[in-house]
Structures are given as C-alpha cells and as structure tokens.
Amino acid sequence: MASFNAAFHPPHLKILSDDQIHTIYRATLACLQRTGVEVHNEEAKNLLGDAGAEVNGNRVKIQPHIIEAALDTAPERITVYGQDPRYDMAVEPGQVRFGPGPTCTYFIDPRSGETRKTKTGDPATTARVCDALDNIDFIMSLGLIDDVTSSLASVYEFSEMIAHTCKPVLAWAFKKDHLKDIYQIALAAGGGEGAFRRRPIFGFFSTWQAPLIHTNEDLANCLWAIEKQIPLIYIGGGAAGLSGPVTGAGLLVSNLACMLSGLAIFQLKKAGTPVCLGAIPGSMDLRTARFAYGGPEMTLYSAAVSDIAHFLRIPFMGTAGATESKVVDPQAAIEGTLQIILSRLSGAHMVHDAGFLDCANIGSLEMLVMSDEIIALAKRIAKGIEVSEETLMLDLIDKIGPGGNFIATQETAMRCRDEILMPTLMDRDDWVTWQENGAETMQHRIRDKIRNILALPPSDHLSADAVKRISVILKNAELREGSGTK
Image (cartoon, rainbow, N blue to C red):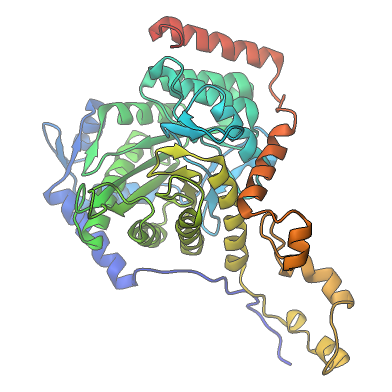
C-alpha cells in the first residue's frame, strides 16, 4: 500500500467564505474612515492624529493605511506565563485556551448552594478549582467582590487569585492606580520587575464599549500596561438590534471597527505590543431587549469573528461555557455545549466566561466544572482521526479476522488511551450498576468533584515575604482611596 503523508486533517468550522471575510473587512475599513470611533483619551487621540487620522473632538476617523500598518506590526502569537512554567499559555494558531470570566455580581456558594453577592474568598476558591481542572488554561475570578472597598475589588481579586493558582491570571482594573497595584502584587509574587519582563504572569483584560467607543479609563490602563510589557486582552461586544446593527454582517463590522481601532492605538504606542482582540457579538432577546448570552447568535457571530481573526493573523478571544439559566440544568448544558464545541472547532485562540449563569450575572463553579468536561469532549472531536498505514491496521485486521476480538491485542493496549477519551463526570454504567453505586446524577458528581478539590490543602507557593509585601500593597491602596471594608 502507498504511504500516507498527511495523517491528520483536524475538524474545523468555518462560518464565512473568503469572499465574505474580505467584504466585511473592507466594510470595516470604510466604517472607520467614514464614521470613525469615539476616543476619549488624549494620548490615544494624539497617537492616531500623528499617524494621519482625522481627529474632531472625540470623534476620530481612521484611514485604512493606519489599520493595515497596525496589522503588520501586531504579533500573531502572544504568551501569558504561569508562576509554574508548566502552565505557560501560548496564545497562537492551532491552540484554543479556555477559562472563566470576571465581575459577576452574584456567586453560588459551593458549600451551601446559596446564590449570594460575591465576597472575599470567592476568587481564591475559583482559582483553586481552576488550578485543579485539566482543561482550564487561565484564571479569572467569576465574581466582583462586594464586601471590600468597591473601587479596589479588582485589586483584592487579583491578590487572591495569584496566591491560589500557578496558572496564568487575567486581571482587570477600574483605573490606572488599581492596575499599578495589581502590577506591584505581580512583582511581589513573581520575583521583581526583571523577572516579570521576562515572564509576565498576568495579562490585562480591558474593554471597548459598543457601539464604537473607547473610554478614557480603559485606554489609559492599556497604554500604561504597554509601558510595563503586560500582554493585553481588549474585548467588547454589542447586541444586534440594540447596541449594534440587527444584521449579523452589520454587527460584525461594528465589532471589528472597535477591535481594529484599538489595535491601531496600541501598535502606535509601541509596535509589536502583544494584543489579543476579543468580541462578544450577540443579540437582544426580542421579549425583554436583554442581551441573550446563551443565544445561538452569539456563538455563530463569535465563530465568524474567529474566521476574520485567522484571516488577519491576530489572536482572538471568544466566549463559551455560559448560559442564561440561573442554575446548572439542561438549559445550561445545552447552551454551554453549543458554545464550547463551536468555539473549539472555530479555532478561537482564547475563550472566556466558562462558569457564567444568568447573562454573566452569576458565577458558578458547578457550571465551570461541567464546562471543563465539555471542553475535554470538544478537544477529542477537534483532534480528529489519524489516517496512516499504522492506524489503518490492515495487518491486525487480517490477523484477527472475521468474528475476532481486538480487546486483548497489544495494539489496543498501546493506543486505547490516545484514541478513546475517558471522561471524569459522564456516567457510562448500566442501570443496575448505576443504582448500586448510589444513582448519582451529573449534578451530584459535579458537586463531589468541587468538594474533593476544596478538601485539598490550599496552595502555599508564595513565599512569606511575598505574602507580606502583598498585604502592604493592599493596605496602602486602602489608605489612598479606601475606607476599609463594608
């Protein structure tokens, strides 16, 4: 038999044709030149103006050559490092990295099951669970702490996460002072400024606003992060028919206009700045005008943006593992699975918001753990089928023959774990065995897994000196603007 050269053809999903991608990209360049964007930061406006953009107050109209120059200098690959090198996260073509999201108002207590305001300790718990999940690559807090000085919530969240995980952390901040606090905490944890420049142990997560707005605070934070060589994740959204055009194509243009104008600002600040652009393009619910976080449109449009990002050779962050349901139930499973499968097959480089319930209002460790299992299934599908002389196994088929059994062969023993996924939560027993083992449902198994993770000793990877320095940073932040906890 002839030899095989291409053993793998990984499954992939492509929403847009090449012609459609070119059309949307050209329309975006036209939108930026005709309509422009609102830029509320003076340094950003000066950077764009010096590059030839038309600046009129806060409205900035950007010529195509500025965008194309930014695309030329923006790296196709970025890296966010873990405190443990085993968890270093390369954001690059061929890799899809999953993690939770930030800033949910409410959090489901993993011990009592109560849905309550997010409080101190919840980001640490989230980090501990994420650290134990094989398919979660980066950490975000799942909640906005409510029982500390409100303006410092992001600083407290980061201090908890960095102490309880060795995986890369994505931080956010209200203002530049808060980002500076987060940076100082990272230096304390990671060995100082020189070590951080070599291995940035967090990425900065910031947002643009739909439609077509870059705020002063978000840009000020990002521009300062660039000076400190902190990788950027710059993401926004828009609901079709509400904060964006009702058509998918129009929504993609308005999203892409914000993404690319942001990229231009950052590359003008410093060419080669590592940036992952993101979008959460969804639809409004026609009954309530609320953003439909679990709607199929968000998953479809996100996969389409992933197509465009691949064409432009830029890293892209999408969304998956979220639901409109208020509890982890069949609706949550349906919406989360659809999002994760399509995100994995579309090749989005980073995917956040695993663990979100109720339109990003409730953080759920149960949803996060279920998403981890779904991600494992999606990875197996995306792995595809190896077709080679070795895997066709004609000699083995001939040896075993009709009516034979392959379970005891050396080939099965050698390859079964590579070929067949063994999930950790799915039940595959027969009815009698399932009943004998307690008749546990998926929700029981999810809760048991969380309980077992949290029963393990917390991480103690930070030195005593680092812990002390972080405590001082938090105290100084309170003295600067806080009034103590509520």
